[in-house]
Length: 449
Image (tube, rainbow, N blue to C red; front, side, top):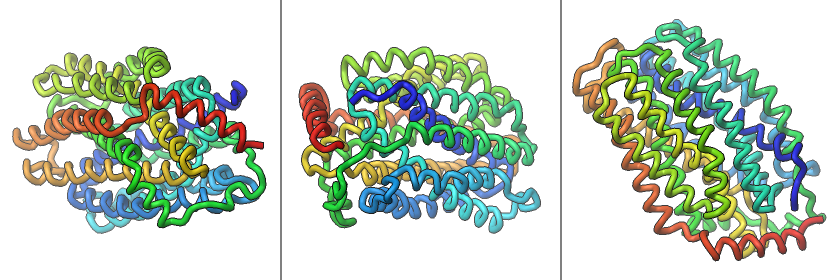
């Protein structure tokens, strides 16, 4: 069922906030708390670990709750509006710990843990509800690919705001500058989400349509029994880990190996995002001609191939060129994730005649957080083994090698493993996928008002 252009653009615009908050956190939180606030990497990893355990409950339960207990105003939008303000405020607080707590392990650990849980709970509710609406609102294959492309346009704007612009405002050694910029991003997200609610209006179903819902036990069994879903969850987690490693470790790489100031990130990220923008149209066309599975494998391979030469590069300007090349693969990865998951959701819809996007996107959120947990574990283990000193302005050669491991080698092998998982176990592709999509269209016409 085609939808209006205004609905498509409005809905897709929420990608700005979703990516803006997430990308800035991934790019700067690790560096901010460890290098700027002098929090021990092991304690940082512990906070992230506890947060990930909270997510093991938080994301799936929020998804199940939304699926099972619709309000009179809908299953998704009311919750998005309710947690709209807490989301942006808690995000700003991440970047505003008391400056007097610099180097104070206990205080910083508790502050980070508490605000992370507040932020993540709000982010889960708002963004999960919005993401779960994607396959419900956009059922036509052409509309879905178009909206996926539009979402990445807004995500690319977010990447500019989160990765390219910050060095003009956030300076090494200036803790307060992080806090100010955190509030700026929170204000942008507040306005953007408010505008995006227009396109997030839910489709109407007959009265009592959701009465025959599923239990929590059935929801967990769904995950344990669906091999295609498992392949997606693992493949997406691995890709998220690989991309997140590059994002989080670039500040360490440019400061301690290339000996560059924070403006270097503007050049490196700027070139990568420019190539991402240029190549996005290619990936939209490629996905339309092939399918999301093929897009994932090719784009992940392009990302892995682009990052590996960095092992041998020490010249800052040459490094910028190679970093820019990851933008081509990144464009495909950015647009394909929700397409892959939407196809899994609709396979379940055909088999069980139940719309339960919430639990699918909820478990996806949980596995994404596992990817962040893997980042924290890698940081703690490699930093300890190689002697990284969070109080030092220079690092030993062994500590520098540890940064290379985290920035280049781990992401490379992560993407190769992700490609194998999707190739081997994700089977919604080719003729099977085409048949499924036509069957879904027919079933939706029967179910909707």
